[in-house]
Length: 313
Image (cartoon, rainbow, N blue to C red; front, side):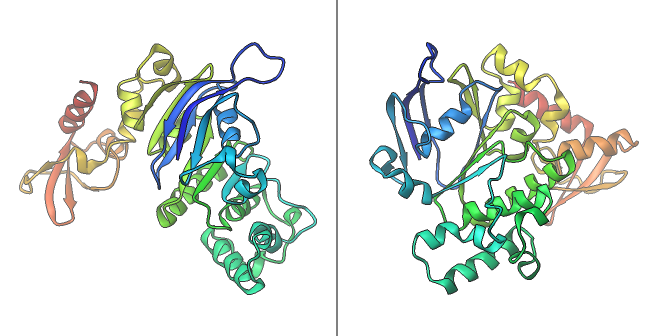
């Protein structure tokens, strides 16, 4: 997917909502647009599926210029999840999920199979949920159905605009976990909008920070935290918070290998984060044993300091 020199100005405004934005997104990448309200992130997303028409610039999805696509055809090929969910209240969950495949002319049997497949994917029992109505579901369950509906027609691209902003913190974390699991299972390209820094750090392969309609930094979560491009990014990310950085680095990346005989006071998985390790250090451990797929090693607080220092250089 490619965005090239896109400008959007709303009628009656003398300020560009999106100001000459260019961004390439690789197939299968999970990109998060991050910034405060009014920074242009949602407007940019709406321009992708032609809910907003750019003043200039081009947007390509799956190699095709979206300006040359009929809006209704384009939107059937792009998944879209919003905070309000937007399920049709008079339709069952099964019919809600099957709306776009039905418009695309899929057979009834194929739609039914896809509905059950997607309900299982978002961890809702098809037998229990396909015949229910939206009013019978919790907010978190409705959001899961919204994700399933967006994936129904096997889109190349999934757009998610503040999708979990209306649910409580516990449900939000669960939905983030589900989104990551689905992304890893399907490899769908995802563009996700949020103003929540922790959510961006948790989900993104790459974070695109926006301010006043422009991209001010686009990089991996760890690099955005460790090397903020501007004071604005530093303040937004609270980049001096070292604990946030620890949550983005795995034990595998910091461990000292081959020291199996060194005395340790516990163990930790190689795939755990340094934030997990910090908890054990605070509980009294000086050095932890690590086994990385048969390769022994250890992790100490000196290893944590070394990795953090390397990220800042």
